[in-house]
Every structure is written in structure tokens, then in C-alpha cells.
Length: 163
Image 1: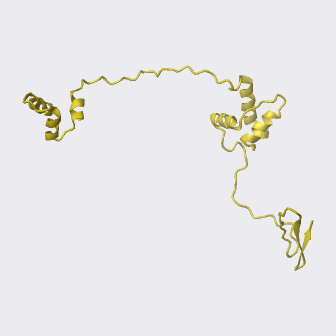
Image 2 (image 1 turned 120 degrees about the horizontal axis):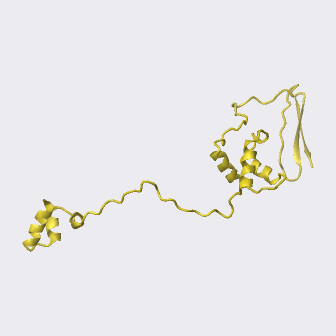
Image 3 (image 1 turned 45 degrees about the horizontal axis):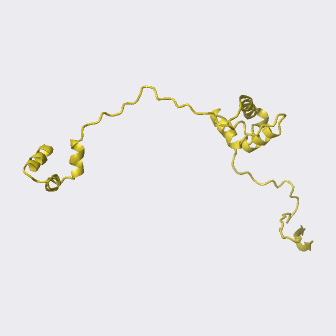
């Protein structure tokens, strides 16, 4: 209906731009409405597969097996990804694997959480079994040319400089 009005105004000698302004339309909107409809692209039932080349630094099958065996070993259940990477380097056949790669393998195996690791139970009280008298606290001073030693014996306090 609007396109008919614009066509009638154009037939009477009015420019399309002026007719659009009178109707409160943008000339670009009219241009889009007049354009032939393009069919929507249809998605294929199966997505196309892209052939990706293997990275030059990808793990070989034996290296991947070594990583998986190390991740699943109970001996290294408490080890971090960095510790596992160092353990692979120090093994009988040194394998150099990034800790990030080990983390990715752990994630793929769904074992990147606590793998038998000790679960943090919250804060614990400090060990005070060694305290058997008053004023038995210690501290240190990290000065570059010596250290300040605090000695506390039976309610007396003494400081001396040791170099």
C-alpha cells in the first residue's frame, strides 16, 4: 500500500526522496522493500567437515599414553599439572609436555578435579604441642647484613644482633 502511494507520487512527478519525506519514511527502507526477496540460505543436514592439519608439536600416541598413565597413577594423585610435567621429563624416557597440555588431558578425561587429592577441610589450629613454657614464640628479621635474634626465656626478653 505504501509502495503504491510512492509509485503514484513518482508518476505525478514527485521525486521518491520527497515522497518518502512526506510519508515519514527513509528512502533506504523503500529501497529494501522494492528489492527482490533473496531465498534464505539453508543449513545442510550435516555440517561440512574441515580437514585440519596436525600441528607439528602434537603429542604422538606413545607420549599421549604416557601422559594418561601418569594422570591416572595413584602415586601422582596429589601432584599438580606442573609436577606431572616435571615427572614426565624426569621419567625413563624423557617426555617434554606443557602443564597446559596435561591440564587439557585431565579435563578431557574428566579428572581435573581432586584425583584422590586431600580435600581442604578448612583452617586448622596451629600446632602448639612443642610449647612447654611461657613466651616461646619466635620470629626473624630478614636484614641483608645479619639477623636480629629474639631470645625469650622465662618472662625475660633479650635481643642481640648476630652477624
